[in-house]
Length: 168
Image (cartoon, rainbow, N blue to C red; front, side):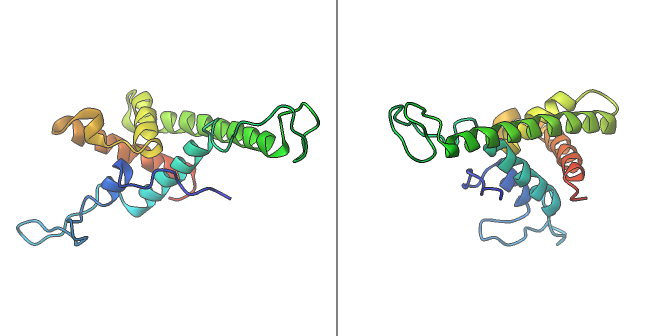
């Protein structure tokens, strides 16, 4: 079972998925009447949210709590602070971290191959910052040309991620 993502406020990933909507939730239109398209489509958004769940599940402190080393019960022997739930949480975090590292390496190679140059490291950084942590593109690179290039690279990154997740 995959947990719901921790970032619940509107964030960078959601902003890109909803970029075509106005404040009332209606589709914005160009002066000629053509509707705006979202910066990322629902499949790419789903890939980003799936990555976010893995990213958050890899947090080594998630689900852990301080325990009394002298406590017993809950699967603990006297003097053993490692109850079965804590051990399971640690193992879950480690598995999620291994999955994240594998996926990031694969996506980095895919993006580098798709662009014919070496943007793969930046693509993984964008994936962590926007999909993982919820940062916005504009907070990371400002506005104008850099933001447009960054959004296009992030879109390519999400497409590679979606393919790895079997969503495309």
